[in-house]
Amino acid sequence: MKLFVYGTLKSGGGNHGFLTERNSEFVCHYEMHGFQLIDLNYGFPYMLIGSGKVLGEVYEIDRETLVNIDSLEGHPYHYKRYLTNFNGQIAEMYYYLSRFDIAPLNASIVKDGYWPIDNQKINVIIDGREYRDKAHKIVFNMRFFDGDRTPTNRSYMELVSKRSHMNLNTDNEEIFVRQCITRGIYEGFNPFIYDEKLVNLNELKITE
Image (cartoon, rainbow, N blue to C red; front, side, top):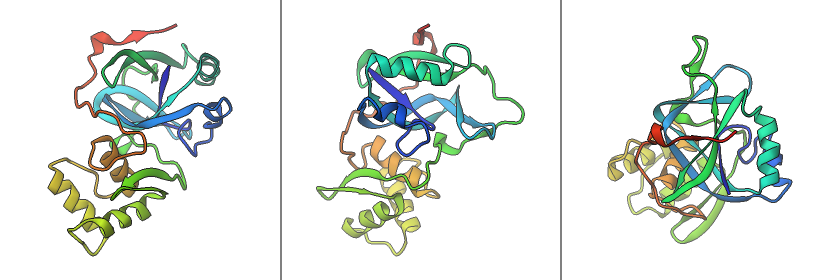
């Protein structure tokens, strides 16, 4: 079974050990459509139904890991666990959604649905070579191997956004690299088919 994570369960996050202790396998970077992240200054995000996208990671997990993370997330009282489609497969991936129907007044929206993790490294394939590094160094390597050389990372990100006809984040290298992977501009170590379709709320299935 697969699990989508978007906060402290991501690689480098404070709760990532819940995944590594039973050797859960990283599948890919992923964008969930039809949702948004909010920050209430608790040190972790909440995911709500919304009009945006959430950037996270997908892992292959076992039943015991799911039970342990249910306990961590307070399912079904604090967060609720849902089942959705993934990469063309029906009812393939779990994720956790906040019990908030709307964002509290004191909440701030997390830009581009990306919860930052300090010093996180990303796996990506550039010019046929595998790299694992921090985002700013990966963008530098993208610039180096790209025929359209530019003087700065920022100018290169703007070039790629324009050239791809996609609205990429050109202010944040962490978000930019992940968007390049999830949208097929650059290849991750474990590529998958990018699906632009928003989640159909009628297809969401609660799992108690």
